Image 1: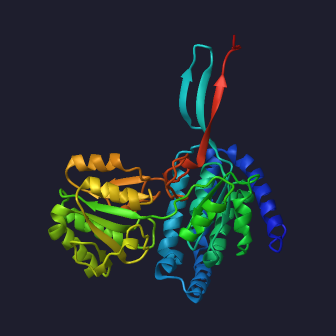
Image 2: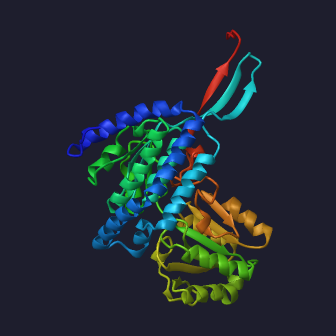
Image 3: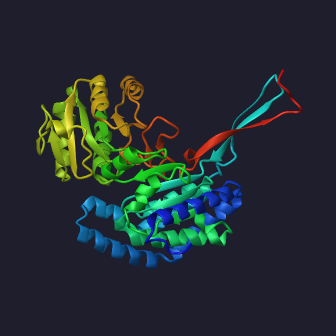
Length: 419
């Protein structure tokens, strides 16, 4: 494709047309060829890791000059271990069963029809993301596995890293005899490319935003293309009166501090009133000892008192709000008011409050006695995820290869006619 970076509408139109053509090829590509492309990409990425690290160093310098937060810089940073994780993810996706053409249901009708419902690719996926270079590989791989072409628009902070990873993805495609246009990366930082993608109804079938509230809000407000997204990860952990103290301490500490800048990081701790003075306060003290700023409600000691705007805040930092609640129903009511339908967890040993919690909430992911940091497609066995969806239509939770498929009906008969 010739250089059209000076003419964004023409550039995005050309990329969309190329993606649509590539999607037609991918929809019919064999599982073996897609597998070969993903393995080839993994090998190319590991072979060229020094170039990827050099590109990332340029991006890290750009991020520092731009004044990115520590959490955002952590998302942007690559090292050899993280590249190995990306390579492992590519291999894991390659080894998954091919979702395209899988029969979801099959039945015969008295009218002579034999009907099969089978998975089929969505077509062209657009992914808009900020400062997470690994998304270039994750999104490209999941779209390829599911038979979709993808147009990637990475953030300006990760511009060089994304280009370097994209080169490995293209190398895998070409080695497998698949069109390079199946995975395209927008070659400019110009924000006009985002607007063009949001309105490209002729060329893009679904948009997936990966980033902060500002980006996701913009996409949800202005997109004319369907969107898979979550606006915020306002993640709650509820300590029930029946919580096991050892599990509670380990889970809460991990849920908050393992990586504070990801959407599965706990942002609010709810504590049953019967254990507030004991285990609840012990957990708050533990968090403060670990360097977490605890914004505590009535009945708890924290770094400072909680304010109304602390409930429902996605801190993405070493901060957490903590509140005493009457019981599991009060916890559910709080989450329904302030949550974002992303991920919520109950720590309990009694089955009754767990059943109440699971039945009373409709978050995309509900957990029992597990760190919310597991809210991740790779941890769900999907190899990776293209994002977390909190909407009610089509996909919810981690969006992997299967969720990037729709379905169609294949109907066969032996001369059946309708009376």
